[in-house]
Image (cartoon, rainbow, N blue to C red; front, side):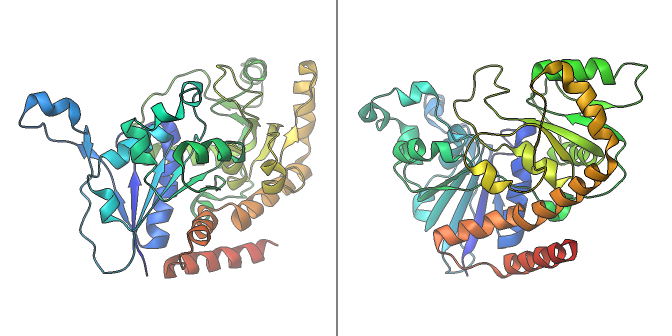
Length: 363
């Protein structure tokens, strides 16, 4: 059986988004019996004039425990963190037999797309990253450009959640509406002013009133995040191209909010992504309920939805059930093994069996 190592940027990228991938990394380590590799600040070089050539972080990779195939899985938000993690491991290519990466925000900045290929290949970052064996990304619309950029096989791997740990279809949901992270700003403002007024009997939880640049305890942050989401009846999610306030996104994709929403058993309201994988991944009734195009109808429409307890209850159970059966991170770990032609670790087999049993009870 292969020997697994999982490289994480959790110590160098303590942002709210990193919390999603800490959970993925923990599932990888647990289901594969792997070892977690986290960068530490490098010791200053003896010769100050050489400091600018040294990597700012270093990962101390242990020696192989066995003679089995050595597999390194890197989880990162974008290509810059992929390079940073690889640069932290001198000799990584000779140390590991198989190196693959999961890159979440897998789209290239326009400045990178416009660079001549010959010039691109001269950069240290490109030479380093193009030496890995496989890249997994959660956006079908970027497969071509990422494959051309890195020059290695690229496979689609959707986002997911640790449904075994955080999944819920509980009926106790005191928060009526939840809108965290990237949202439609006009809708958010209307809902906040209406539902959080002193005279309102409902609650609208949202995070657009603050900026979070750093999280000191990612586990504590995710625990309160999941508790709030599990206590919410409705959560909002919008196609990236509809909630694209700063013009950051060029393509539609299925973001983390959909997977987190169904894991917590919420009814998802908003605008579903237009990418083709959306209908394949979220194919059931009320997977996303589209809001009215007329903003003046939004609040009366939501009031009707909140009053329909039967529909909400059915959606809570249905979404959680589909999350468990199809969108747990362990399903993604299995897909990675299939793509890489690796046998499933024993612990992964056991966890997939547990998921199947729990899913049957819900059917």
